[in-house]
Length: 545
Ligand SMILES: Cc1ncc(Cc2csc(CCOP(=O)(O)OP(=O)(O)O)c2C)c(N)n1
Image 1 (cartoon, rainbow, N blue to C red):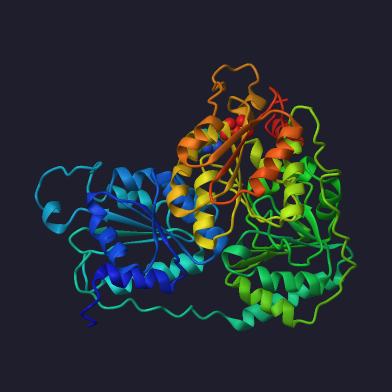
Image 2: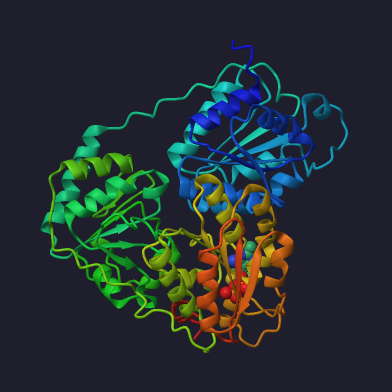
């Protein structure tokens, strides 16, 4: 046994071998030994944040955007249970996230007392995490720990879902063998070949084929082969809402994002009139397809998701997406139909820098102008009208919980992205969501993070006003957020007109080293066109007209 390796060091090495590049965390007594080992070894940079939801969202975005796996390390009970929502979001949106929770040691478990942070039984936490992770292990035996860690981390990567590791505090420094890296399981090559033959036959016979790309392509590191296939097939390419930003900048004939009746009619027509809709890595969620209102004919879809391929009322049960892509690329299938020319910038014109009040589409136009002038930057959006506005930003990567739709994601996810890649993000967040996790900006100073943060301030929960315009419970009042930026270590400016917005964006883009907050005061009732169409479609669908 490698005597200079203890369980924590073996775990850290295994995390790194499986694609972790940092740890986000918030310590407590049950996980202090792990944090001490992590800090002493420096195997992975350790970033602490102020609230566990922020820890989880930061780890999520590091994996979602940077690839590999994200790691969130927290204490038992109060810490880990604060992490439930971000882990649930990662499960729903297929993000490979590793939760490491401290836990009581053997002697205190056997002591007969109710322990601090304990809920019901000492295993209640593990029970709760079983529901939002694809695999779990309690590392209470050094003999079995390496094999358990190897199994759990392999599933995290293969299934692109969160996993849970519970580390009793009396185990952190126990001598332990290194963790093996398990080989990928074999798959049936004959089944893949049969599936490829059937898919290519359907595509050859089609007059109006369309390729729809979804988030599994990014989660499984398959964007480049998918882009090669898109160029080889030379057919129109569309992303789902969750897949917005996929294949950006990869010279692919991207038509846009499918939003059904709530989006670009050119895109909706292409998808709904297609006679072969090849969907790669697409999750069949309501945010992706409810807007279709039944206008997509299932008989025309060929769906590869969750390791299976569904077409013509039958299923190929075990077709890894990477193997399918490889088979389609090798099939020689090409130039099926002249790809629709990717449209010009979606926003018909640049931001008018005049004295008019700012509406959401003006923010999208201003960001498009900024990216065109200063170069591409990843967009990270919280949930609210800022998310629907983000759909009007062209040719940019977009990170957002577009399906699970939790608030609080934007700011910590932007910090996690910059921690992982060093790239400067543009963060879009409503005033309501900022009140949840926006304060994590206070950590930028000590880590040198400097995102551009655009706060959509309508003094309330604007999306909910769309559904209940007369309710008073949606009002939040004006929190004057830009005035708080300096105390958090950044620069803040409040803007009301389009000219002020244009100037603020130009200043933010050319100021580095401190986060730049632009608090946009939106007129009451200001709403993006996309949100308005989504709300109308939802009302029709749910009979709320
Ligand atoms: C963790 C969580 N709790 C509640 C909700 C429910 C909700 C969805 S949208 C929304 C209002 C968002 O207000 P904000 O000011 O951020 O943005 P805007 O609408 O553009 O004004 C709420 C409360 C969700 N999605 N997540």
